[in-house]
Image 1 (cartoon, one colour):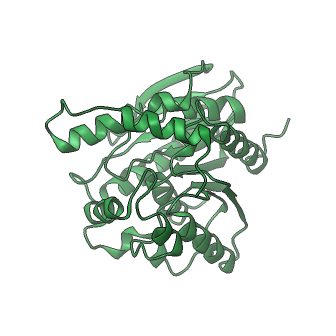
Image 2 (cartoon, helix red, strand yellow):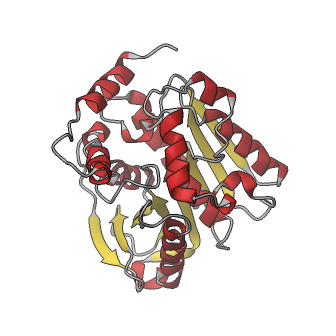
Length: 298
């Protein structure tokens, strides 16, 4: 495994974060994850950013890139192992994605495990997506051009939403967690990381799923109703093999799939565009895919 200089810079930053002053391990874990936000680069200005609440009290952050009256939208579910992540952790890359795509990006602050294991977070993501459809007109969103996206655990949630809510135009799955068996070749190759380890991922699935197989996309039998899908992975991510297998399973269900593995990239690189050229490139590539699938071609 060749660690690129930019990747090493990201790893050095991660290892420099100190949350030892926080006694509660869960709070420390969440503070640590939010502290990684600067890896994404500077906070870009967006034409309009609004925090709002759904009728079921789910916090949303809406990034509107232009004053165009009607735009397509993507509902985005953040990563963080189902137990961390927030509107803070993904604010910077989502600003970049909104500006680059010209699409409204709606971040969902769903409930986290272990306090709210499956299906708590998924129910929030489902409710938030339905709320966007129901309020599309007042939000200035074209209801026939709505997609979902997410990274890591958020990618897992995105594909669950994608299979349950009709009318979605597309889904973008950024290195999603698909299979709790954790027995692929990439898990054997990268059991000790970088970024996520086999031991940690076992705990993540245990906390989130609590033994419920319905929490894992690998157990979904019929994928034929899924929207067009873009699956993004990193070569040095232990999740890469299950991502590839899921992309193939989607194809077998006659879903139109675009798939890309970024060479020498690690888990989390979507959030690391401030130090990694590939982190910037993946946002641009997702933006291009969204512009095409949501019919926003200039």
